[in-house]
Length: 319
View 1 (tube, one colour):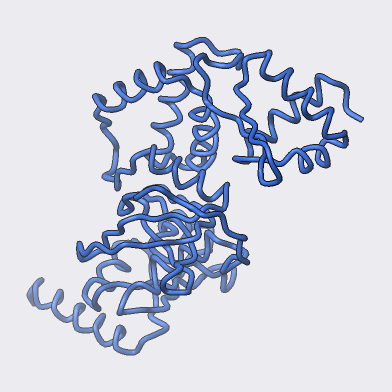
View 2 (cartoon, rainbow, N blue to C red; view 1 turned 120 degrees about the vertical axis):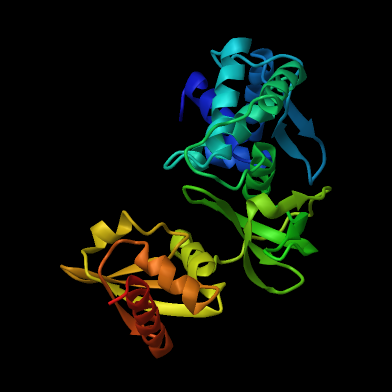
């Protein structure tokens, strides 16, 4: 059995990782009795952690936001600095840390007192980022709201604006957030359409209240990153193609982002690119601008269009 200090840290970690726990579940996870759980919860409260308890068979324990910041070894200024840094990383899609930033931000904002939330909100509202490349701006508060709904298996209601600007109301069972270098996507089961859907987060406007809870479904794929990449780079477009790139897979990966296509190893010196575009013209430009020697595998219409573009360029250069 864990000693008291280690058990308290484990209990706090469980409360931060899930919205609500029953006393029996916590006792089972910690290997103690329900009475010991109640005593440990009282100790956390004495340390300044606001643990809420609801009675009855459907009740449980929940970590809430208190009047003061609990002892996280952070003073007010440090807490503001951490939260702003996490919001910046989450909202700007910094490669490799965006998803972790959202999880950490969700935990931190859960216990931030109101006065610090106001300071962080003001700083973010009056800060304008200057980025190297244009990105679809995502409100970090929306990201944390979606992350919490995924964590708690809670139905989401939101308005969704598609690529044509049309708005629809959606009710979904959220599963995971997936991020690329430039965009965030929500993978969720669409209740009304009875199928899995991928939503761009910058087009989502949450419409609470959310709920009720739901039993998580088997995800649409083991590799959700590949699933989203295929959906946003190929399946969503009317024109689809398979292109042989005459470079190793590792070299091609540096030129093709997950949102631009799905790469597949073929040999030591070539790989296949599966991608999509709104038209044959756009497809040709997209592939040429990769700066890589290529060969069209399919469709045949794309090969014909490449020849047409080649002849047009030849005429433009003159004899």
